[in-house]
Image 1 (cartoon, rainbow, N blue to C red):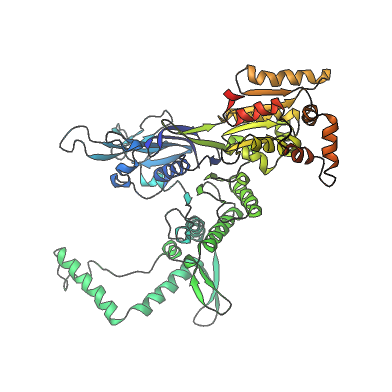
Image 2 (cartoon, rainbow, N blue to C red):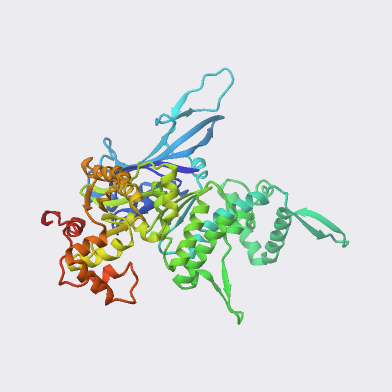
Length: 553
């Protein structure tokens, strides 16, 4: 089960959002851009709890417009099969519309409309009454989202508070609830046996379900004090009286008694407890935030190890409380879970995105008319994908978080250009600007086109090669600007040679000799710190554009 498409209108910052949702989906963007609102919209429409008109408030309406409505809908893949009156219907989409009565005595008051869609995007029809042989059925629109449909959508939600209580079996959209529900369903098949001894000491075999029910019955017998039995009898007497029956004469017509939990309700009451070395026990939900987060993520890993299928996981900032190595490990876990389940998450960490999987990233920005979501439609061939995987580093994943990107060939540019930027009064980090080193000239256009496809303003700074075999590459890079994709700056000389040209070879060589213990790639950056020498004009123009100061370049 997965959400293939999401459409939101008028919900919080989401004025008009319509986007395809991949199997593994990372929502990236600045704070307050609307990432969490997308997760909340999905949670509202997918969770099993029954939505009512009070599930939304005027605070949830875009711009808090008194005339505004909220509409959230999703397409499901595969569709959910729903049966009513012996007629099966495929439900391809569900949603809700929070609107107002247009006429009648309640005109102007808020109401909640259910959205149910078939394969044509229309409201499906179901029989009004049970089907009968040789009788033509009266078909009526399905005007609500049946609970049976909602129950077939296994939603798991992990918010930023990382409260373990939300993930315990009693939680509404809990990891453990999903795992234990699967265990309970398997338990009810009767295939799990237990060996017991009867009253004569002989070994007998029974199902675990029967054994559980017998034990629960014994537990209830232990609780049936005289006061407990009196309470049961009193309730029974009053019920019979309210039904117009004689509590004495009709005592056998109806019976009432408290019964123990069945297996799934018992599972829902379970708590995780932690015991220290002294034997002191405490509920894990009372631990500190860091430990609770660790336990929630441990449960997530357990979910992955069981290879469960078909769930939809919504996770806010999976990187919380994790150091970089554990972030990389958790990203691998999410990718494993994503093979059989849909995983949708928000993140600010480059460890939870990957340039080769750029089509799994939705870039979320705040526009003049609310949140805007951009998905890449760019296509790579197998060779390009392979090169990107070989060149993969977390630094390159910062591409997705940049306000502007300058794509360069190698480490020398990556290390030296930030020094020149500082001399120009440009704070790259504060402005969300990225100088993206891509491991060679052959990768410049590949990375640049991905950035452009995600709506990120992109420039390329490269060295012009004079070899005949390289002239075509030069031409293709120039076309990046002439075709209107972004900006291009070409240095006539190699990067370090351009610095030499401005400073003269003699001065540059002397500066290098003054840095005997500095690595070859780092020397140009240290030399660039000297404000006595000019910044090469081509580098200056590229950096001023990156900072949004192109007019001065």
